[in-house]
Structure formats: structure tokens, C-alpha cells
Amino acid sequence: MDFTCQKYQELISQLKNSGYVFVTYCDYCRGKLPQRFVILRHDVDLIPLNSAVIAKFEAKMGAKASFYFRAVPESWNEEIIKEIHLMGHEIGYHYESLTTCKGIIQIAYSDFIKNLGKLRKLVPVSTICMHGSPRSPYDSKDIWKQYSFKDLGIIGEPYLTTDFSKMLYLTDTGRRWDGYKVSVRDKIEEFQEEWNNKGWSFHSTDDIIKALQEDRLPNQIMITTHPQRWNDFGLAWVTEYIMQNLKNVVKTSIIKMRKL
Image 1: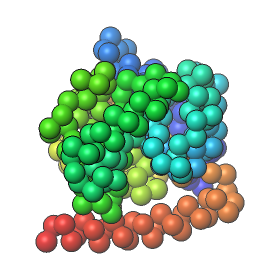
Image 2 (image 1 turned 60 degrees about the horizontal axis):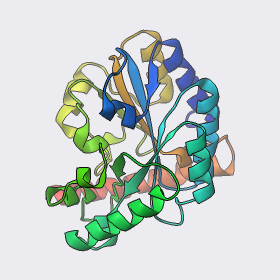
Image 3 (image 1 turned 120 degrees about the horizontal axis):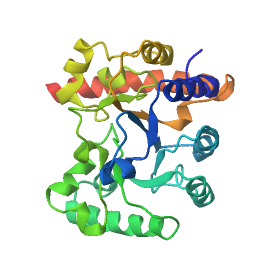
């Protein structure tokens, strides 16, 4: 069974057994990296308690990760944010200001600064990551066409400051590892065909684990997960399974409409 806490633990264990060093996205931006490394990026869209569970397991495994929190009640939990930081993980801001500010870049930038300041009162923040907001017509990364996040002491944004010509990107968007097919924004279109041709497109977590066991993956990997998707089998697991399948139908329709 996939997308369980046990399956995620198996993935982390196999990454460690395969010789990958765990680095945060902040580490990546600062350079001086090991030859073989993996960035564990967690987008905390919902249910922050799930992120705390994952963070505790990773800390026990010596696997530090980057957790990006939204500035909305369903993600923002100050006690959990501080708790995860104290475990040795990185905390970043999962921004969606252009969506919440209805596409007005100047207002969105002010909103971004306000929320970043609130987060920095809790923990250090050096990197940010866009929240996709698939139903929104706005892409919050467009803020940086007019402003510079470096002026705010931010050193990286995964979609803008990552060299994907050297790094494989895997994400559980859509509750599947080949979710780029139904993803509106959480994908790297420029390199996806190349990765597919190299056999680096996977559907299940077991597919990734098998590729690791066979040493078929590159030395640099970024793995993005949404912790609300990973649950022990039960009501939460079933609910997420049903809801995500419904969302995938909606997102597929959005993608088709935007291509017209």
C-alpha cells in the first residue's frame, strides 16, 4: 500500500542506504555540497500535524529536510513550526500572495513581506517556495519579475534557483509520482521529457525504491512531498485518496482549458 507513513520510512531508509546525503534547500543554495545528495522538500499545504510526524522520523534517521508553511490557518501552526525547526530542519515560506491579492503585484509584494516577517519572528527563514494554487489564474512567482527576493535576505526559491539540468525533480503532486501529467504548476516542463527518456518517471513509491536499489538515479535529487498525503491506513488515508482523485480530474480540466 502506497502513501503510508511506513512506505515513506522505507523510501528514506533506501535513500540513506544508497549513499545519499540529506541536505536542506538552504544548504543547496549556499553550495559546498557532497557528490551525492537529496533535498527533501515538504510543502505544508494542510494538516501541519502530519508534517511534525514526518519531521520526527526524519530527525531520528539523520535526514534533515525543508518544510514550507503557508500563511493560512490550515497550514500555519506556530508551535509545530518552532518544533520542527528545533529538530534541525529548515523552515521556509510557502507563498501564494499573488493569488490571495487577486493578481495585483504591488499589493502581493507587501503581503509577502508581512507574512515573511511573521514567520521570521518564529524561526530563521532563508528560502521560499511558491504554492501552486492550481485553481488560480495567477502564478505567484510572477512577483519576482518586478521585485527581487534577494533584497529581503532570501537566497533561494526552488523553481527559480535550482539547476535542474543536474538535479532530478520528483514530486508526489496528485498523490502519484508521475503527477506532472495532472499538475498545473508543480512540475519542471523543460526537463520532464528528458527524465522520461532516461527512465526517471515513476508512478509508485516502490518504483522509486527499486530504482534506488538498482542505482539507476542521478547523484542530485529533489523530492517534494505534501505531508497531508501520507497517513497510516484508515479514514485519513481513504479520504485523501478519494479527494485527490477528484482534484486530479479538476486539474486535468484546468490544464486542457488553458491550452485552448
